[in-house]
Amino acid sequence: MIRLDPIELATGMYKTAILDRLTGEDDPYSVKTLSRIESTKEKPNMIPSAFESRMVGCVCEEDSNTIVWMWLQKGEPKRCQCGHWFELYYQPMLEVEKSSIPV
Image (tube, rainbow, N blue to C red):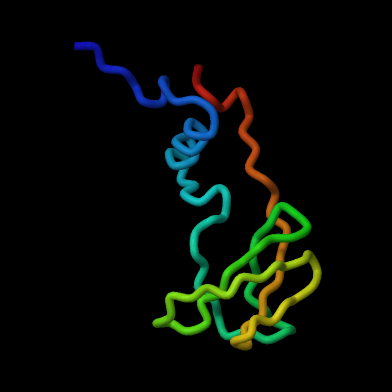
């Protein structure tokens, strides 16, 4: 029976995700849920983004299953209807060097 290495068979974004996990990066696209902290306009919850704007959701009450969605713009703190503040900060996009991908 021939055994094939899954990394050799993987391509594109799937291969990038596998290689990221092998290097210890388990959320390269910043899609995991972040726990919010008590926040003010001067000290908001910081949200990573490689773009000028990003849509984020806030679960205002711990036992709620409703998400309040809002657009954040770079450099403009925004307050959710529950009172928590959010602001974007720049995080560069994930770049994969061709030399780091085994052939």
